[in-house]
Image (tube, rainbow, N blue to C red):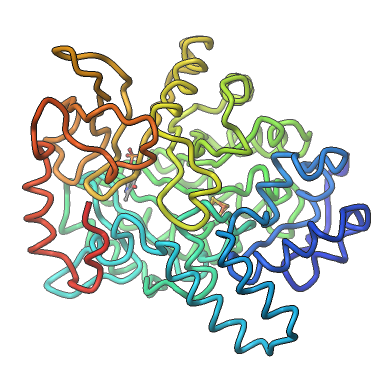
Length: 449
Ligand SMILES: *Cc1c(COP(=O)(O)O)cnc(C)c1O
Ligand code: SF4
């Protein structure tokens, strides 16, 4: 296995150049083209050469994760784009149709755009989100792309210019002022996109002033990233790999905790030697790697896969953190697993791993009122119910108060659930709706849930 590799990106316009594509049936490539006009995709030579099992196409989970699949679009949407391509329609016409379809795929789930923007002295802070008391999300303006454009991810609208999120966070000064004004905030989470797309020099322009400001409340810096498995050479042999590692070390040396919030969707991602080496090198900087992934049909909807995933992570010194429910956006109909089934998969896996793997929490929905965990199915006064609780709440007082929903084996998201035992509202709903009335930009009423 190579210890260095020259990066080559693939997307809609050049995926047919991938040597392994020659053996893929034309119909599948055609499907990628049709769907890829609506749901963007991007990958690189490491994923293609070392993660995808080309002998198992089209079922290989890393293949499905990487390339658009026909059923990711509803049949009518597929037909619209396919017909336009058949007619040789010009690209502006295809763009209009694609944009029309995208708007029907709930591009702004959980009020991602409009509800969580903090302000300082009455001025909104673009490029930041602050939903849960202790943690501020920061979107550095140069870090708003990814190694992949996963169609289950709430970030996909960013990659097609559909997001009204404004990434004005070239300025770290405003972040520092906000942290000074909000001593309850202990964590800053750099997110994107993938912040580790940035050069070490650009990243340093955010991290170094933050450290130099010497904020007593800032205890942890977190970085959300997919780079460990999708481009491990970021930590091995890119031109500025050593500078990046030195920057990470600087955070730990400052006495602050540096956490990688790493995405790994399938245990195969942890097999290649460069990935293991990258994990080791990051850990040697003093950073702790915590791991998360959504539960995805066609990719990892099997307890055996999660057992393997968590075990390998712990073997490599990573800490399992969250199992998410696939969000209500993009190709959710393709990836989603009903809540009851998600709980069954979680339980089957969780009950068969050592306590060292049971740091993971889930399955959890990042919904509008908060992160809601499905605790399981039980029976109360003769009624079959689903038990849930907040892991994070818009109001911290909601956290860890169990609540009950009517059993529904088809529900895939919080807004499809009804309160159990004759109640008409969940206990948090009135306050949640008041929050909406007071804060909601009236232009996203569909976010109500
Ligand atoms: C998940 C999440 C966080 C971090 O939550 P932790 O449970 O502390 O990891 C922060 N902000 C938002 C909006 C989130 O969705
Ligand atoms: S943030 Fe992670 S899940 Fe989302 S598109 Fe990027 S790589 Fe995929």
